[in-house]
Image 1 (spheres, rainbow, N blue to C red):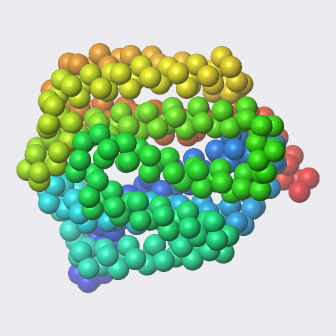
Image 2 (image 1 turned 90 degrees about the vertical axis):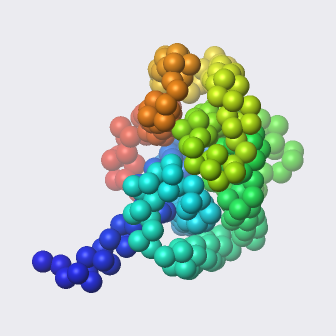
Image 3 (image 1 turned 90 degrees about the horizontal axis):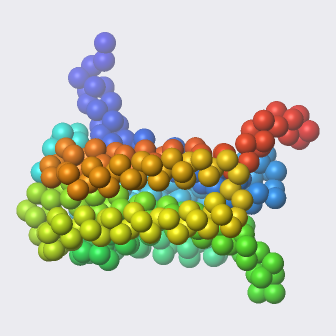
Length: 318
């Protein structure tokens, strides 16, 4: 049996895990590696990418930067979360604000240190990313539209870190040769950005009471739920553009199945959205979007499944 002190330590570890949303970090790491293998550098061997030490540093730096971002976001949202997420908030409060800040600065220092090993560009990139996360949590997130846009943009930024890593040596003369590849990457990024933006706006509907009590100026608070739903509907239909580019102009292998399923799910999503008016219903919509985003990560493999089929052969050759 654990002693009372040991139980407290375990609970604090669980609390910190909840604060940094440790359940999200492996998904982010997986998404970055799969993006590198199937989208950003398909001409490279999968094993070479997995064994790339500098890429590992970038992925790890991204993961701990995002974890630190969750901490600072939790730090500033502690009062709001008491209303919106009372159970999670009580668990998160087992770790003091001082400890959270200590871990926050430690993670940021470690992220910048690892980035500096890769290159001075990576150092500047992650320094800017860390600042943006803090600025968003401290100021921007309370404002409508720009807060939603910035939240979605920051969620996509880690993928640009990998993009810059693979393409930082390309000269201006070579850019035209890679233009089609850049278009594919951009279309994937735009589709993900739109899903994340829709999710952020659903969260505003879900967290209406807490936002109102803490003077957050979100779209549903200023313009009403109807306007918010109209914007979400427009954004949902805008996802057609990047998907059309990916499916009809470029080759995404079997991942087109994922996009077709997405459209079906998003259609029912919109129908349910206009019938929703409670926190529980908006939470369900939020979870649907989470499912689409997470399943999209795993479906990246469908772009070229042969990489998995021949994985053992690649390892043996290596």
